[in-house]
Length: 106
Image (cartoon, rainbow, N blue to C red; front, side, top):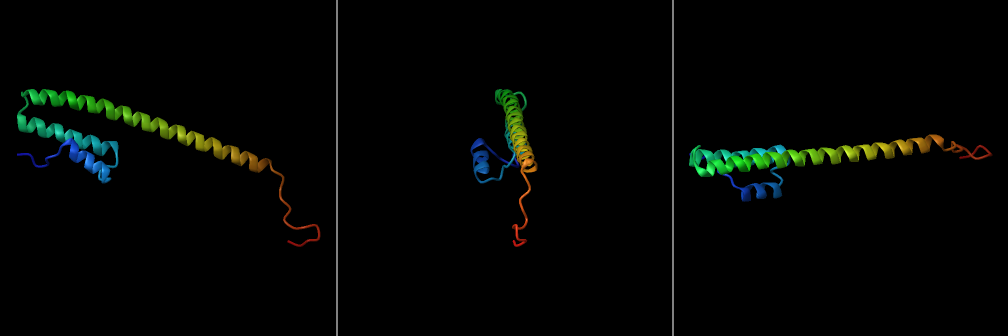
């Protein structure tokens, strides 16, 4: 008996509805599809062999996507840190503004 039936169209809907918010959640859902396939069709069926290949491909693609997202986030953080450093350097090099006018008024 399949307790949690799921397919790719349901995963797509869950992504659109923001029920799936991470690569890990997506990966769990795909794993559930594969688990259900093996459970329903039996370990030795052609469908189960195919689902193992599918799961291996998904694992590879999810890891690649996580690496790309991590690299992009690191690059963005580095660019933000460089910009903040440039702003701080420019602010420290600027002459101090006069707090009051020459006659002591503000």
